[in-house]
Image (cartoon, rainbow, N blue to C red):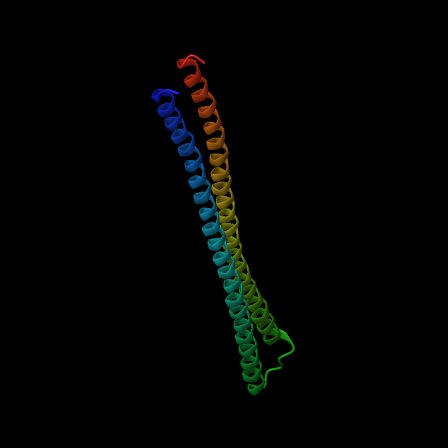
Length: 164
């Protein structure tokens, strides 16, 4: 066996190894990116839970404040000798209740909107991680195919050039 065949074989082996190793690296990068994306998604989901908890507390606090206001209105109207269950006193209380509930619903809607946006960001993060993982897997497959093609082509070239 000639030195040219030996050197050609070594060169071919290094090319094939390089192709396979490069694919492994890209596959690992894809896995790491997916892990980071999933971690970020979990953080965003926890943030969404926190937003909902805070929003519920704000909504509850607002309803409590409206109830306190309504109690003060009734006390002041009653102390002034006004009947609280008819006429403008009744309308005042009804308006207080209605406006308070509208504000509470605004707090809830705003909270839910913020929480939903965070959950959507979490979904997007996960999808990006899946795409990174898929790209790494595809790169690994491509490197195996490239290595196989290089090997077959190299063996053919070595045999052809050395009279086999």
